Length: 207
Image (tube, rainbow, N blue to C red; front, top):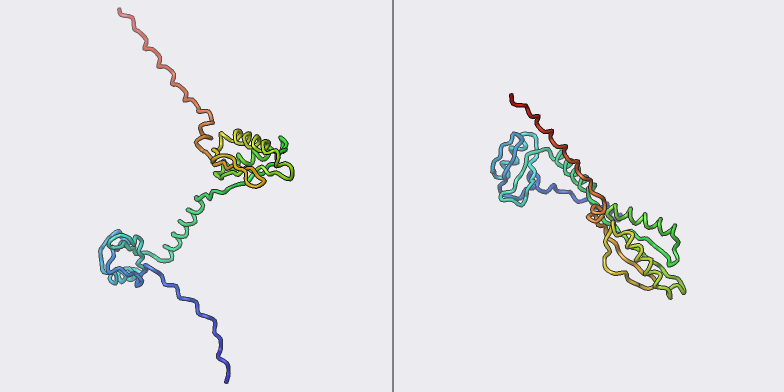
């Protein structure tokens, strides 16, 4: 006997939910392209949409009855994907950017990392400032505290410190969150130009 043939598993058929015959509600508030709105049994609303060469799609499933619109399914999918893409573009994911120092960091390196941190805060991200100690440097924790104090003071116009600096293992760290209100307040306000006084009316001598 020949061994049974092994067929690859069939892909599950995707059912379009809330479209045409897949609509489970008994009746819908159907909206048609000419602007007319009718409360119809679902089969009748589907049939009317198909007579127009369109699909019936539920656009508001949580109302009573659900609102369904007669439109082209492909066009509806395209518009939905476009809206989702635009929403993702507007979304900003807040990240924690790490800036590392050593207790003996020189001024040039400090200024470079400070400017990076300011840029991160302006972009809406949080900053984790970290002072790492190696070997016998752990005996000079006060240098790390002093450096972080200087760092948070320099970034005060752009961010707010979350809690106090913490020592974990061989590292001192502090978290700074963006403070847009502080940054806006730090900028000088432009004074509105005052309107010039109206010229006085000329007096006509009385004859």
